[in-house]
Image (tube, rainbow over all chains, first blue to last red; front, side):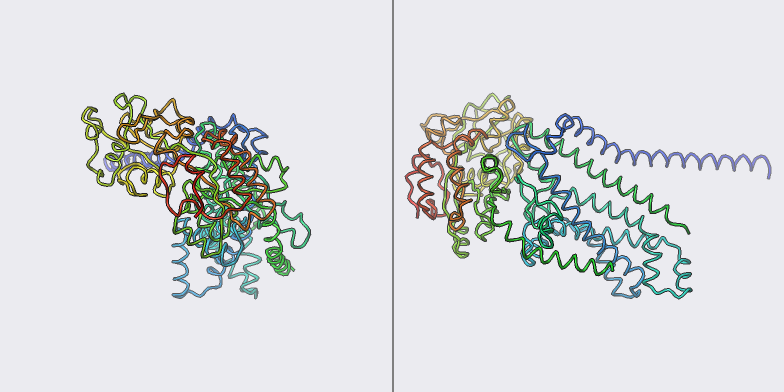
Length: 307
Length: 332
């Protein structure tokens, strides 16, 4: 290789590196758009609402006086609805994902199901609300309750849970399955002892993404009839006279954080806008707490995997 | 083991469903309906629960006057908030479901027409001029203030109003254009009145309308337009006084609650409605609405005591009805 060729090659590498750097800058810009938008909204809410957050705000019911109004019924409602959503969406979603990956035959029926699930993820949330109003509220007679709301949001996040379950199952090396089958394991044994433990970290990520979306949803919850003013709490879960009384809370009327915020932003008094910002801040914290829990669980689960 | 536990949990849930739906219905007062009436009902509910030490539970939802009547006529709610009288269609729905109701006016609202404070050419507006601006035929044609009155500057006319589902929109269009929901469509519509407040406050050529409470809270950002009801009448500004003495026409309007007659037999509902009528005067003033005169609340209480059913409006909205006239109306 003579000097001239070497120089040309070096130039080529420099040029390629320049493109590489340029792409890096573009990537950072793209990332910044997302991060900055979130940060400016978050900081704005914090500046406006932080002064309003105290113990009283968290432990008071809504009121016509902005200074006395709190979010007790809203955050309790949101938490309980999320609980129902998680208990409904996770088992069904994970089971469906496992079935599609490990059990289902690869034929056109499975293809149709797959296409439908992907499509469901794009259906506007209000449609789920209308479906739930007809199905849960009236046909099943569950009423305008925490249970109806939780199941509605579970339907909403089901596609996300299914898709993420399948993705993380696919990431498990094929040899592990083959090894287990070679030892004479049944499909169920493979799923129980290998597939579920190894994919649980990925599944958890999908569940949290879904839950974070669900906690901010307003439209379907309004459609099924969440209330705006509610100054009492549902009975504490699992405390009533067993067995039936323990589930009283599922049938209680409720409100959730986004509805409380929405109501406050549309009030004439400016002080309610401050309340809305404060409630928004708490809602973001609730989402972050859920994320934190997921990260911690994921860390623990990863540690227990030893391939 | 595990699956047996899950199965028993499911069984419990279903058993719980059967047992507990009833226990919640008992001590509850369920209210839904208009967002305009909501602040008063919320205030009453708040004070009532305090007074009863939470022994009786009250829930209030917002699904609009029309949405509220839909639930009410299915028997899902005990009380419906309404910013206009019940309409023929809704009366038929209630009748079909065997639901009878007691109609109780609880306060007045002054529908307020607002402009930007920098607007110095408008001293008052006649209903006729409002019609020129808002009638369906004005769409795309009346775009400058000069077209409404030659003496006014050639400034673009920017219009703001509530959306078509609102009782306020129904009332305004009926009062101005003679037919509910008949309006030009090229204006900025929002169900959130604060959006309308912001719109008019930022645009010198802006004009909008909404309930008095939103003007009162933002009177440093907006100017209320005195209204001339008809040729030769004086221009009257909206205020609690002009509403009560009946001179603010035609935009002073009564707002109502409708009580399910069967629910009214239950002690908790009866107590709540009586509490509403006894404290409605102070509480509606508290949330910036115009209370009825004291004797009107006493009259309503008597009306409720006798359980007089039906509507006094015959399924139509009566525009510009004064408090005196309202009390003289006979139920049909």
